Every structure is written in C-alpha cells, then in structure tokens.
Length: 166
Ligand SMILES: [Zn+2]
Image (cartoon, rainbow, N blue to C red; front, side, top):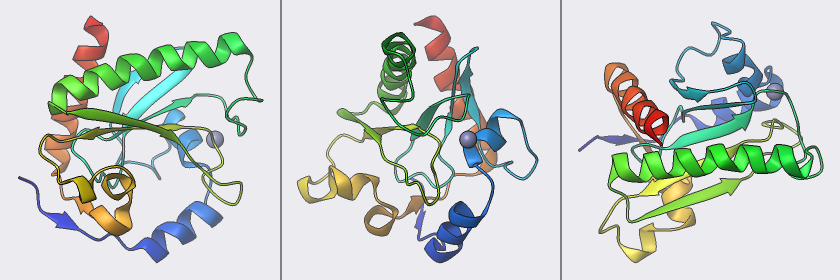
C-alpha cells in the first residue's frame, strides 16, 4: 500500500556515527530530530516510530536516560520495567498492523546508535518466508516504506491509544 524506497544508507551511517545521540535528541524534543512520532512516554521510557520503517508500525522503545549496555546498565527492576513497556508497545503494534508475528530486537553500536533501544517490528500476514526475519527488518533488503508525515502522525496516535488502553 505504501511505496518502498532505499534510503541513503551512507548518509544515515555518517549521521549516526558523527552526530549527537538520536534517542536523547528525541527525548529532549531537539528540532534536529523532527521526523519521529512519539507513541508513548512515561517517566523512564519513550517509544516512537522508526524514521525509515521497513514495516508499517515499526516502533522503537528506549529508556529516556542515555544507557548503553542492554543488560548491565540496568537493575533487574529497571530492565523489567522497560520490558513492560516493550510488551505493551508490541501488543499495540501487532493489533494496529494486524501482524502475524512481532519481532523484538536490541541492536546498536558503540560507534553510533549507542543509546539502548528495542526495535518492535510487525510482520505483515502473508509475507513470503524469504522476506521474513532479518530480511523484514533490514533496510538493505526490505527498503523503507514511504509513509506521508500526516499518516505517520495518525499511526502514532492510534498506536498510542492502544497502549493507553492496555
Ligand atoms: Zn542517548
């Protein structure tokens, strides 16, 4: 339903490796990061739409504080608190996208994208087997969906409403 495009991967890599932390930028509403639509926020966590989504409803969840080690930088209670948010976001995204599975990954790099975050990626029904799993997540294989900004805003609001109801 949405056209796909291949983002400028080199420009993206340059930005994440040399620019300021994008998650901290979104948390602080830095105007240099205008393309993210926040779907959920509480005192410790934030969730927002991926800028170059390979799937419709692709959402990221992160702690608001800049932490880099996915397990070691959190107490067990802090970690489980974040996973409660991941669970709520995953269910909201699954329902909104009518997904047949939801992928949850934490990736990142110490050389760029260091701020811990979880990718919550809905897999649309009837996706061919070879287009599932990593192929459904990677920009290089899936490309990104060209979603108009007003549709992203509406999508973020719908996912946010589902989270609030959960
Ligand atoms: Zn950060």
